[in-house]
Length: 313
Image 1: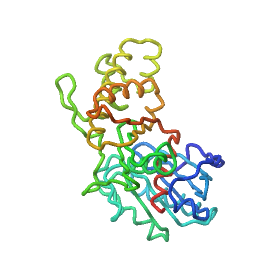
Image 2: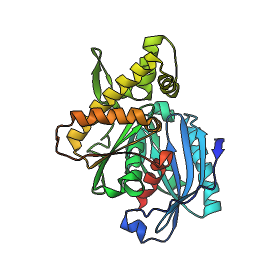
Image 3: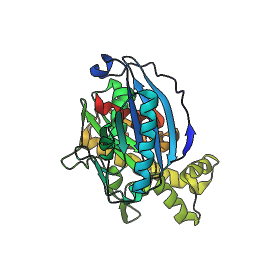
Image 4: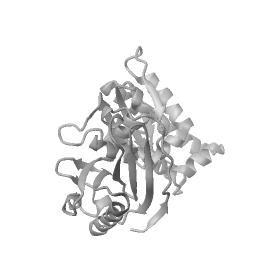
């Protein structure tokens, strides 16, 4: 894999990780990956007693071919092992992840195969931890981000689809079959039709809605820009998406009753969109006396990488 960009000197974040195992440990280095449908982030992370630091971050296009994915990941690992003296690999991965078997399934569009086995890392001499990307985002926020002050958090990672995570007093909730919080696939009704929730209010949904109204294929970020320039169709699309996101968020709050709800992903950068969604959510929660806290991640695309590393704590 050829790197799109390299950023080898990311400044350390001077906040103390909440986990006591982290607070008391000598600095350790981890090779971390975040594997998505379109891109792969590869990084080396150092976690110490009172800070974390990304020593290197690279972004690659996902080849969506199992052999090429394996070769690219191992190439980065072998190079990182020589330069940073670490064999600890942690992976945030899309789709249905079995953390014990260390496999990803139902993700052919991402991995080029229905079942992708990560144990080739162990065969190459590395230790390995792997978890679903939505849950890694939640772990990253809980240990290093806005969730450090909360006992339990619900996270929504808003991009092309919606990744979910729930941390309850440090426990990473996976469900009985490793498929908890696959909230993109919640069924929602709009204009008399049932669709996946993400197809209505995530990036994919916003793009589809705009295309149905205009016949034009436009990426979500440009639709937000058009709305900011007072384009009426774009404003209507964004407003509808915020309403659906807010109602869905309220339903999740009613189920999990979290202390804090944290939004992340590319759409979380659209602050007015999130604020509108939060207003709708607050109107539709059942417990009107609860003081639910809402936040937007400040970790950006590093939350998943940090969450993956925290699997070792």
